[in-house]
Image 1 (tube, rainbow, N blue to C red):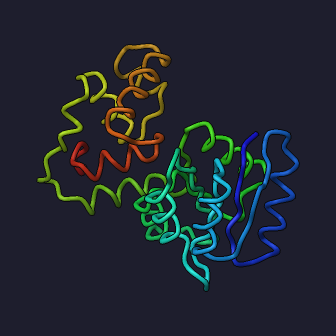
Image 2: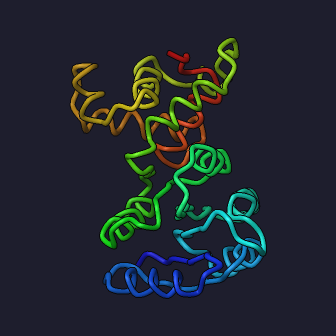
Image 3: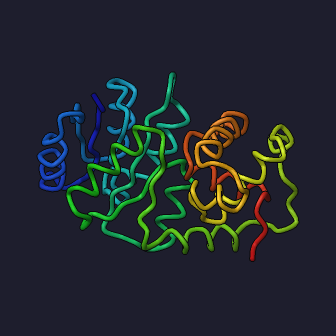
Length: 219
């Protein structure tokens, strides 16, 4: 069972999400709140698998709460799905910088919300397709092109490094496999080992790491 905590300052939004998610046999909403500081406390107490986090809340914003939750996790940290009405690049970028594993808009279809929760619980990141390319472009613009890759990158084999680069360029496992003339299952295995070595939780945070650490050059 996937344990979920809902964080949104509007109770009607939380109620709607709770109804949608509880329709699924494999998802259980175990807690909810309306501000960031309470979300931090709930995350520590309930240890959910996924937190659906709003961005802008009067009692404490979701990005700060996400940073605190992931930094303070005593065991396996939850995956944070940012759910917001805003599709501005700055919110998306800030959410991923804070360590969120996914981003989805509040007007997404119910099935998309359910799928997003399942994907994050399974270790797959998710960014709304409407903003994915803009996010990558923003990472490329913000990072210093002269910054050399970190020491963690040296731990990767040549194949693993190639796969991380192609992933950060926006390719799927199937596209990477076609590019490198290997099976999709092989791509998945190499990527899993690479993520373990560099300390990322999912595909989205692996892309974040690649851009932040100079693995991918702008343009």
